[in-house]
Length: 177
Image 1 (cartoon, rainbow, N blue to C red):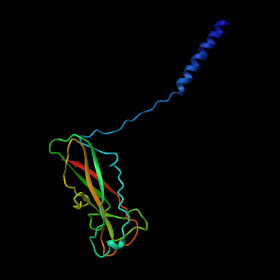
Image 2 (image 1 turned 135 degrees about the horizontal axis):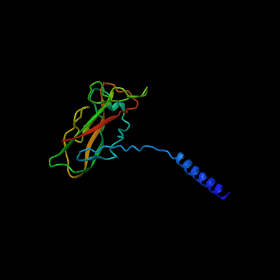
Image 3 (image 1 turned 120 degrees about the horizontal axis):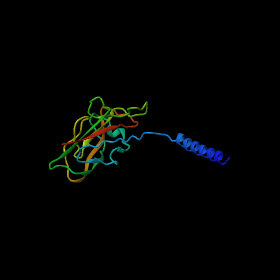
Image 4 (image 1 turned 180 degrees about the horizontal axis):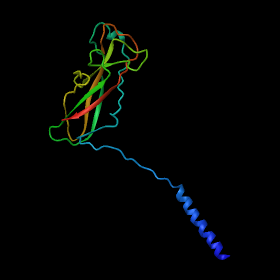
């Protein structure tokens, strides 16, 4: 009788052990990333910027093509740079272009309520316009952090500007030389 009880106990222990093994699940962990050979990193604070252009009176923009609002300054910060001597960086901006192909069209993705007769012009810190898809001036890089300064303003594309939202989206790419 004792041997029968020991046999039952051994079988129960074996079943319990196999039942726990049946509950285990196998899986996969994917690690993804990319190592790149660039002298700097774009600051996380610069990766998704919002540049407020403010509320601008249509009166100040009416009367002809080429009028600009007061520029709003913004900075793309490059961090932890370890450039070679003489290294530079340029920035190019892309987005949905206005009729000229050089500036950002406002109202993209908006069904109604957006301003007309106006686009957004991006310029370097000196105020020189940067056409969409073109490279900015070359910014010399130094060891450490490098702020790349720009400005944006509304630009009248018609003699009459109508009121409404003046939003647009641009992507930027930093190229190192």
